Image (cartoon, rainbow, N blue to C red):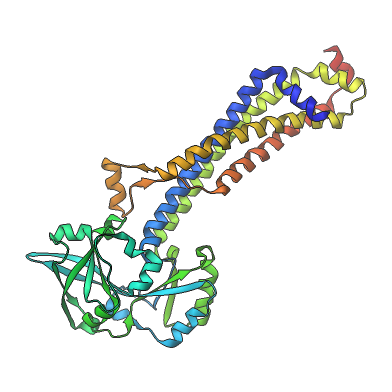
Length: 404
């Protein structure tokens, strides 16, 4: 009976109800889209930086991250491997030997980042084999390279050409070698795409005179969200000879950017909902004031004030529920479409993204927490606004209201 009364009361002034519902719908839909874009941009940023290369957690020799030179490499021994495999959240690890060298083809020479890696394990972490646009993937015992297409264009090198690598090896010795290009890679990060060369780990260790030595262990995690307990556990179990870092420690500028941008979103959302809240409160205030005589009559014929207050609160919550449901239903197809067809930047904006090594696209994120958080925030706001009619009814004098 009470629900039927609440429903009929709403549509006594259908124009006001529709306008109020539409304002809530717009606010919810706008905030869902904005947060979905922001989360999608952050996820894509992390994927570019973390998922395409570094991984979520890395192990180095102590001091390596501050001075990334080949002499700060370490031996991959059985004790270290055993301690890493004991961790519940670690599925596997990718050993890498990384250094800067010069890559040369014909009369052109460019600086490059040489990554010696285990081909099988690299596939598990970064899916490197899926990034090949021409040629084939290498194997553990190959003595051939995969080269990023941007670097290949700068060198005017093609598939099956011979690439010369030379530079400084371990402990100051000379590194020089010739390797056949068996695959061209397209890497999403423009910075990586213009400088990366991959070589099987065994061949790179021979080239750099560093047998059984590596510079980095990139860990493959079962659950990336649990990286902090893993880092703490490894720091406890491993000696001070090693440094264990998650991606936020390795790239604090990206982590700080995400935190700062996240805070700006909440400030903007708060301002938007404050405006919507005042508009909604004005509607509730007007709805309460113009029905004062009705309230006085209902109290006079025996309706308890608490029940009348709950009816008004129910009307407020029902309008909100209609607006929230409409906002979510309208935003879902937009979020899904923009996730599958992300916004791509061109011109100067694309160049700005590429300058910082990021893919110039912004997809939306399909995440249920985005929808739930916005709906929850609006409902909490409505509960506060809904306290006003209850307070008004509690203070109402039925006789004075009937004379109004």
